Length: 212
Length: 237
Image (cartoon, rainbow over all chains, first blue to last red; front, side, top):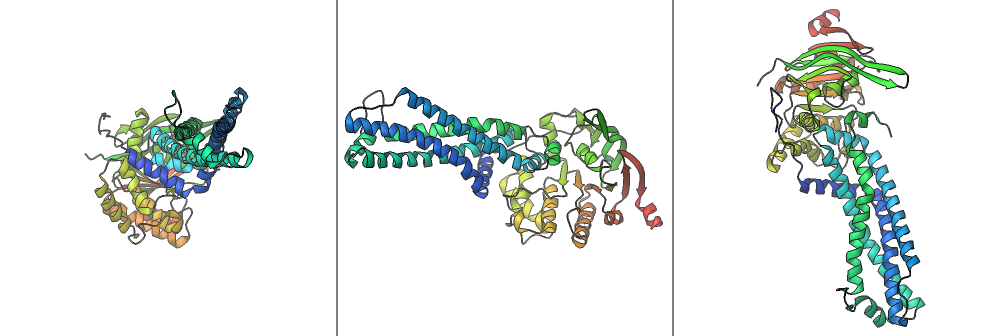
């Protein structure tokens, strides 16, 4: 890289595949913590899906419905609460790992590597939370349709899986799956940005001095 | 390249500002450590041992003065260069072992080599070699939680040597170990020092360390009180 006068500074490497493996390992080994963080995503995404799918079922059954403006507001607030929950959870995860972050840095990790580790972890948690939330929302909507709207399975299936008119190119359910995953990963990443940055900026000496 | 002094400090000082008070953790340390030397820094707790450890290791920046590692002033290094220095030039051993808890012994030893860009096959080979050298050839796939304190410290020593550093810095390496285990760790470090010619600097108040040290630096209140070479110590004993 650059010369300091008497010896050469070389390159520091940290392949994405290794970072991904470590993040995955972290989620597996600290499953409870990851599950609590993911629960926040699950709830928000489940609410989003149930709301939209119930509206679709209503429309199929009675030809009326759709989503009111105040429901969008509700949805927005619930996703915001979800984000705050993730931030809180990730802050604790970062604080718990101060010593570990310090250790990573003594071994040669740069700020961006620590950031990368936490953000990959956040994306994976978002992805898993989004998927589980989607399934939970789908189940809730079907139960709602059958139990409260007296809808037949055929009607529900038509509401969720029939091809829609343009501009929506996909049936409701698969479209919502994509939306769920994008929103879940997006929220999880955005909410983890500050905790991950805080951890990444940590100087090793400070990290080791800190007692939890 | 060979340098006569692996570590040199020049009027090294670190002050901490606590409101109105200034705590002088280090206050004008001048120290030269020869290549291949086994040096112990002794002093009571609060004397500045750990601060000196952090300064030499590039883990913290001094308030005043300079630290040279292999003749390069490390206070002039930027974040990237400092990370490279920590990765390649220095191996760290801590009182609390500081292994990555979710990784196995083998993976812990391989970690610094990932940053150094060593190919995977070579990483595995070297890590097995090092773990065997510290007597853990049969514990490669154990996680830190499945190892005793002494075994964890052996993994940490193997990890410290992964990139063939110029210096191994150890901060109270025997502080969390019982008498016998501590002695084993000290002997292991001395053996590695002799065999590999790696410079070892330990901050300690473990008197067992005196027997193996080439020189002992006593510090008190952030200043060097006296320096003894092993010959003098032997006479005193």
